[in-house]
Length: 165
Ligand code: ADP
Image (cartoon, rainbow, N blue to C red; front, top):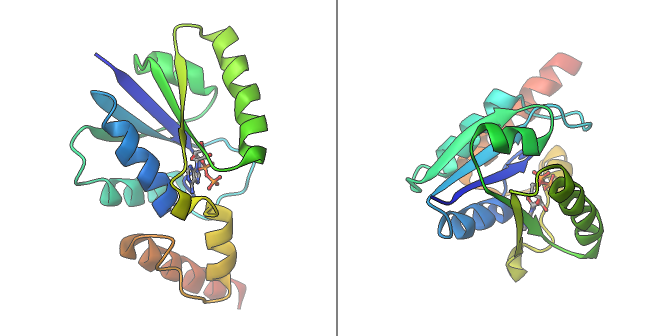
């Protein structure tokens, strides 16, 4: 059985991530989308909120499961018995970082194979960071994220403004 794991911050999940999820779910028997809890970045959404959004946007994909973890990705992959680690590649800066990570992971866990999916051209510019920047200025983000995520972003920015004022 081919079990894949697709780790990331997903803060929030974008159409770029969803594209990678759909395409990689078609290559494996089961795909675990794993939300990283201990990233160095300060997240906008809690792990539970990010999982909730991922569950909502992947509900049409029966072989996709949503989990969260902290610590090393390969440790979590081993715990889940995953043998394929999926990552998405947008541009050269992604490649330099990802190559380094994949090589390090291969040394730590040689039984887990990292597989890269090239971004679809229409999402090559898209990152969660960009979406947050744009949403912060109340611009339309409907081309970047599904309606459910868009609504969550609006709610989050409104509640953050209430805290600040
Ligand atoms: P981001 O870089 O958007 O904050 P994550 O840390 O959640 O995203 O990234 C998780 C994985 O998804 C990484 O492998 C990243 O390269 C990939 N990814 C992110 N955005 C896209 C996109 N638009 N197209 C393809 N892959 C992507």
